[in-house]
Amino acid sequence: KSAPVQSSFQFLPEVPRIPLGKTVHINHSDIDTYFHPLIQCHWHVGRVRAATRDVEILTFDKLFRFKNFETTLKFFNELAEISLNENHHAHYTCDYARIYVSIYTHAAYCNTQAESGQWISELIPGLTLRDVRFAIRAERLHQKYLAEGLAITLVPFENERLQDWSIERLKLRYPPRQPGVVYGATDRA
Image 1 (cartoon, rainbow, N blue to C red):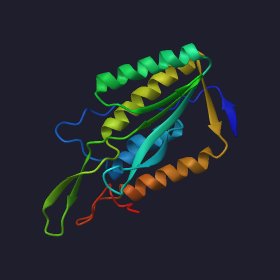
Image 2: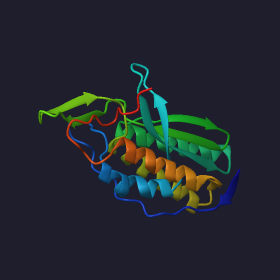
Image 3: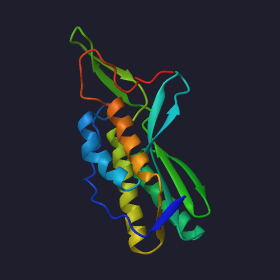
């Protein structure tokens, strides 16, 4: 069940710079800086399993809703432009008046410090500032559609619980850095 809300204009942080070199996982401070504002705009944390290993990968997801099919297609095409410009591609599910977006970085590196003090970089899919950039740009585009009356926001009744769960998952996965701990691959099942 959900309750209709006609706008969800929230403060959005500045788009972070494109990472130079290897794209690394987000850090704990990114949760407050970037994820809190996006979660207030009804983004949430999801999860998938890596095909190559038994690792849970966090995703960042949102369901966008529109008034008609033509608007949905127009928004989808503009999202595709964002993907091309960012060279970062989300997973999309599209139907008549909805687009579900799920994003994470396939080629993300976890930098961890071994007990010896040496830094190790391991390729593990996860959330990065590339995902944040995409989400902020997609949200700004959606807010433009809301302002023009072409999009609607339906807030799930359990939204507050989903928001809390999302922040919990992020803080568990990306805690403050400690030597000898591998970040981004802690949930193995």
